[in-house]
Image 1 (cartoon, rainbow, N blue to C red):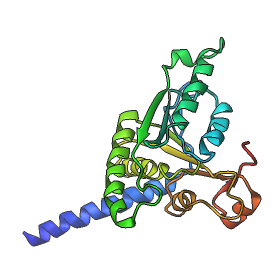
Image 2 (tube, rainbow, N blue to C red; image 1 turned 60 degrees about the vertical axis):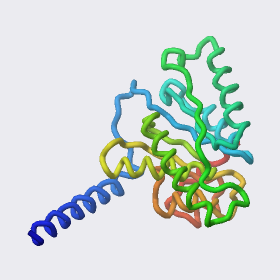
Image 3 (cartoon, rainbow, N blue to C red; image 1 turned 90 degrees about the vertical axis):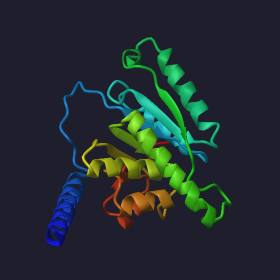
Length: 223
């Protein structure tokens, strides 16, 4: 009985290793899609200038390709989603906007893993809640692309999307653009996404950062 149990465990571990290797191999490599296919896109917003940068990035996207769009911000961030709503309303009012055929944008809030000044002990519980909430959001919105640029709220969302890749539930491409404020070193969010690695495409806005982190790509300035 025991050998059979060990065989099953070994088989499961082997399959998991094979799957993780497969995901790591394909991370960052483009998947072939029909040119007319639109991509459900999740856009992670954040305070402290992250939202302004992200909306500048969204502004240059092909709106018909990256649609429908969903915006996610921290529960305590009251301004970011308002700015995104104003932006999407301006698109809807544009006479040539094709997004009307793709459905309206969605706006959601997510629990923070840790608030500013919160103790690390109590943050364990809030982190667990944030991860569960992030998984619920990812399963609900089913994004094919995640765009983020530094707010800590992107970590549980990207981690959950990566987990779904590994188990084969859904493939989501994560694109990270480091904030222009980061000249010499990555933000904590960027460092984690780069090292783990959870991002398929990792862009920086300063040549020095690209030299320090060679797997990143220098994208110039987005603002």
